[in-house]
Image: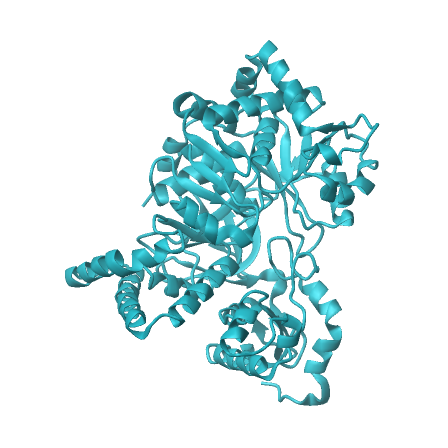
Length: 612
């Protein structure tokens, strides 16, 4: 088992700026970032970081200042973020889905001195807020065409870069001084929580937090040197920050930026990454797509794949039990993987991907087992922004579907008397940003952080998370119900995008269901249904019957108090833009309850269902 000492030895004394310098000096010709504008080597990245750091410094950004970034995934986003870190400032990426009012809260609370925006769309949402920021010194805009005229606070990214490059030529040693000033305990970034239970809070992470996580990930699942990666999640998401920015730096890897998730599969095929992290919904969609492909194959070819999957599934189950497969089974698996399964994974662009992960929400065990039957062991992680992402993880040699694994090296995990999971260790954040700019720890006197999640350990030490403490349902008969369990089971059906289980202080449990915008039309087409409109499909008899079957199948795996007694298929999908989901794709239960109050009441009308 890996220990904290192992990770700290791998971590050394590196900080983000010293890693940028190391990569430029040792691996300068190697690719670092690829995007729409081409590929940047590590030497080019450092030169651009130096120029932008000088430019930001001249614009008034200094040590301890906060900088907000509203830019899509593109190499300039990485550059400006790391440049701010060189100055000792605190960068924070905001979600692109924030409304102007949400932007006002984040911008005011952070007391941002510099804001970096992409173009006109971002400026439109931010403009009403900018005049309310007393500490604002500069607004950097990547699209020069969107710059307002005659206002000195605005500067184009190109202009800032050019001015900074000139300053860098005059004082090339400044970037060295900045790099040498950074220390591991220093703040390196801030992430605002999604605000499911209140106003978003600014989570402040240190160089040590993020690089310890990167070192641990390298040791837990080693891959090729200078690994290829695909960066597609928002950099406001802790997973992308750790994997797409800090692990990239730590491994001197090569990240291909994919700003449009509709192009994800194509990007995976072009890039062939050595690892891939997906939130559960991404894995569920990939699984549904594979199942659709398999269903359309000729019977003989499909039979060969199913035979290979049976062998892989057997190996997955044996290893989940902590054993190694017998020699004949291992040999059969190697043959099946080489001739059938790996070629299938290569069609997804995941033939070389060994470091596979899922997190941010529970992933159904059936989905993990499906990918296990394709020769893919997905490590499920659990944690929060406050724990720098993964606080626990299943391991390549120790995993159990349905659990979130074992504590990361150096992390301690315990269960409080009320069932809440508490953690302590090197991945626990520095604290929340206070209104006065201070950083306020949120641990007790012994360093324990209460996570807000409810969980339990099995006899082998694997942790299972049952739900959020504040989301547990207590029915009117006093039964405790964890809504995420039923919701996860429902989402395994390709038709269903999201489900919200209802039942707090109610006599029984019900559910609101939305259709998947991509999978539902494809499902309908294969059945000869002559419409691709999700709203129309939500009322189609075959769709309603299929959803009812999905509810029945979920109920078969639930205890009686957890079972869904009635449900309603809604005509409109839920998205962060529509307001029912957070930017990290979690349910906003209060919003759903308010917006769909009439639908919910109808599920309990007339006493039509007998309470359990």
